[in-house]
Length: 228
Length: 195
Length: 212
View 1 (cartoon, rainbow over the protein chains, first blue to last red):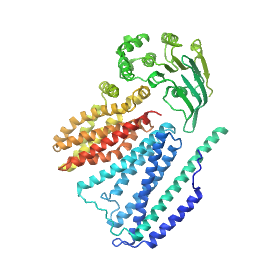
View 2 (spheres, rainbow over the protein chains, first blue to last red):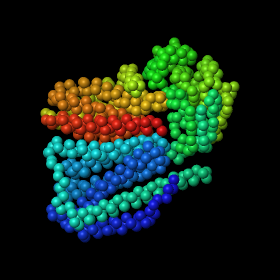
View 3 (cartoon, rainbow over the protein chains, first blue to last red):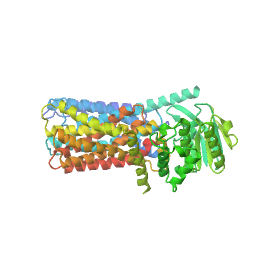
View 4 (cartoon, rainbow over the protein chains, first blue to last red):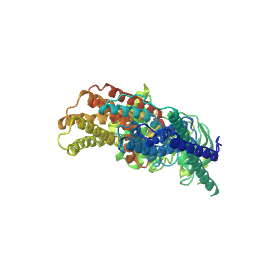
């Protein structure tokens, strides 16, 4: 316990604040309007980068789960849990922003034809079940093991579900996939990169904050136990 | 056979064992006593390999196949007969002469006549005898017995006494009990856990 | 070789238990028949083949869930899992044997359910039968694994569907796809891939579910 982290938390918080502010400024003032959807298309920058951030959180959760099972790292369970928790928070935002984007672009709050959105709904249900599982087992090695195994299932489920959702779409109306990015360059790319970095930094800050809080909690309880 | 150093176990924030040191040589007979909640069962589960310590280390010079563990639950299926239960364990432990061995332990604990009856129809004492059969079936090197006398009638307890006395010295024992007087003549060492 | 024998001994035990208790398979059979009747009234008129295919898969999935929820009940009620974990066999054998036993029950239920479906709704194509076989493998493998997780929790039976359904979405996609398109090769391949991938994950990680 108490491994000193590389960047102190206040500095990290300041960095992500600056990055998020910059990203907001770029999204609203620098990026050009979309030819078809105009101003409101700017939610794309947040939607996509939040989605990538959520994936990163889930991947971090699975990585720490692996460390727990494989190396028996005693702190990995808590790290894995906090990662998944952050992933779920960002996952909620993905569903929200995606829904708004769908409304703007197609006039519906929900579209089953939007791969990314449907995939996140499946993952969202999956990781909600992770929480149900975790809170249904008493703290201890068994809870850590079960959580870790389920988190690992998650990273297998992501690509499998992605493939499945594309397959399912072919059922109704076969689509040809192209990397459509006619005007994905210049300021759009720069803005996207800044937004992505800002959100990753924000997620990392929140992760560290939560982890710090949880560890403090554990230490306090142990201290109380010693005093008692 | 068993060496534990500064063994500790917590479940979440609840500490159930702390700083247990024990050395149990081959052929030893260690009796563990202590009030309810002192961690006897947890210690025995760790020694049998069913649980991992959260602090300290434990070394066991026995493979999984060489450990016999008797816990609070008999670990037999109620809907199967005594024979079927022991046959299953005999297969899982890959006993070369399964039939003979199963028959022998059943005879020894007086269950041969009832071998075709389902465990569900057994009394608690008979179920405990069957649990003892299960533990001794594969002739383990290390016997970890948690309250082996519970639910046994006097006849059953005497059968167990005889079995323990016979194996004493040849096998290694770790036995937890509320009634240390019963096994005192056999014990080579004692460990009293405080709550 | 001894691994196969362990799996055999464990699966035999599960079949024997079911033979004695006779509670899982009759329940699954009754359930799937009742679900078909409910579906008939839930879809008034003459539902199309596309619609009833969806219903068939919902029925199979929930019937399987019924069986999976029962899979570890003997181990839970008599806490015999400790006994199996103590035995020198590979722990994944416990998962594999239980999966095979559940598979046997599900297959038996489907032997009745598919003709019943054909009688009530539409005929069953050969590709559907193939999809049923492949989907069953995935359902029983993953479902049994999650069943073992669920019995270790306080919520138990409540938790299994929650853990299982998100993981079953790809199975439904593959199975329904294989049942409705003209050339089901891709969908069957996808189901096979799913089975293989999750079988490896389950096989490798089951030890951590049952042992500390």
